[in-house]
Figure (cartoon, rainbow, N blue to C red):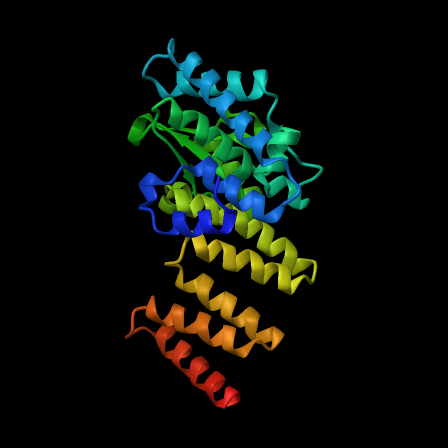
Length: 275
């Protein structure tokens, strides 16, 4: 397997539909936990894939039946479940550690579920639900929404509404974008953003910058992430690195937008400081 950062850069050149989500998450995990046994993690992903495909042979073309099959493989056979006690532990967002411990954050578990569903040829995608990653199986009216943190419990509109109110307050209501399908890259960015924010909260600015730079290797077309990375570099006094990142953000921002104007002003101020 290639060096992980080189692998992330290769992933950054792939169309979204060609990204192997578990493989990409494993590369991020190798960077974040270089002492972790990534070979054992890769072998476990292979076993999960084989068991899921074997189980899928008897499953009808129905999202509910597929959800039950995935829950049987991942929950009952392998024992994956949410880690409420270790929610803020960085290990809960690292795929190597999640596979070792069989527990993790919703998005980390979701990647294992997406891996299993996709090797079976089933339609599966992340859902951009606020503050709690959910999984969608099927499409359109036949879509089933699952909470993988709770073992794959299906959620209908009343349960989703109650969950949203717990997160955003009693005035919150489901919106069309509450269950927006996520691209593979977006799921990976949500996974790694957990790590980046935990490092920022711990005061580890250098670690947060390193995490953001790795995110940009796999998802280089992210103007907001380029901007945020530039601002973090600026806080450390690395002005040349800040200028590079803000320049990348500007290239990817609509030039007539207010955001582009703000970026130009920030770049000009940095150039004056450097000169």
